[in-house]
Length: 471
Image 1 (cartoon, helix red, strand yellow):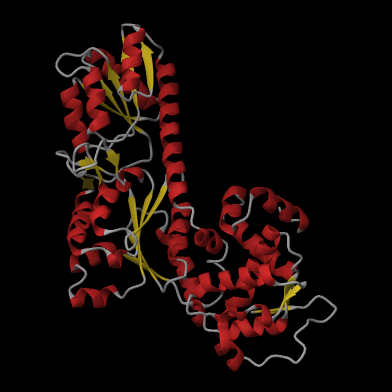
Image 2: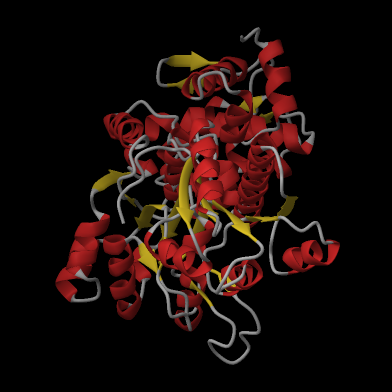
């Protein structure tokens, strides 16, 4: 299957009347919709095995496979796309039956081509929204929300290179492999690439390959047909199909079983999948971003990971440096977390005492950014003062207390305590203001995306912008 040449919606018109289907296809093209045409249900079915479409317009009465039969096939075996039924007979029973078989709308001939375009755009919009809602439900992990506002904070060469490569690769459809230790924010990198891509309006569908039993993983990825195995009482659409027009994030790809690696390789090569129990291959249009905390080169040498799959995934590699290699970023990260958690919990935490910043900066954080975030959250919960102190960060245990000297009186001065940043002392407000300014710039002033990246609501962002006089 060839890569899509443009981002227009793709619609298949199925009608046995040649003049009608060709005129409808021509009109759709004039409305910036890529149109395909088929003269029968059988021809449409064959075309859908070669081409990916976003919606179907199908006539009710056709010789051979009728429009209703085609809808049944589309619902049970075909791609998961919306269908608009058209008919010269305004029979209510036909309309009801069409809806039962999966039609999203029904039009009676003669109809205005403008009306068809309106119905199609609504069907496409509803399908995209449903896919996005489903992806959001699967992706609602607290760690992702926390890391989203923090990943791009960094001034070291490793982080600068990560930002530069991410911005260059995002607009392409190339496969990306994100590597880094656990807790560094690999999924956040994938989400940022998705947001900066031309697929940003499509779904972002994540799956942790190491967290699903092997016997269930294949059906999650590829879906299955009714009767494919005991308990398969209906058709299930897999994640490759759900990610149509968007991004499929394969987390912990190094944990994928070898038999499934073969099938993933075939999908990457052919851009097609087959559901479990299915007999037909379906074209897919999902960008693949994979991630791992393992050394895949070593896994290839050990025989636990296929070399050909590794090269397919390793088109562009993005390496996230561990937090211990960029301690200069800890003050800004910790302050951002403290500000957000204090606002969420209604706590009167104004900042982090200098000695606590020193303590954090000396700790190695084996759990990386996620561990730092969890530590700050716990400190905010337990703190009863205006400033977080070293004693509030008991997560490091004896190791921290042995390695970090503390002042006899850990309480901050009466005046607001400065935060030690890479550029010298900064107070909490200045660091927060800079973080918001940087996020707004990265998202080109788009407030919803900026709020999502920072892990706050749009209303909170607007309040902060007013407070800091940011426009």
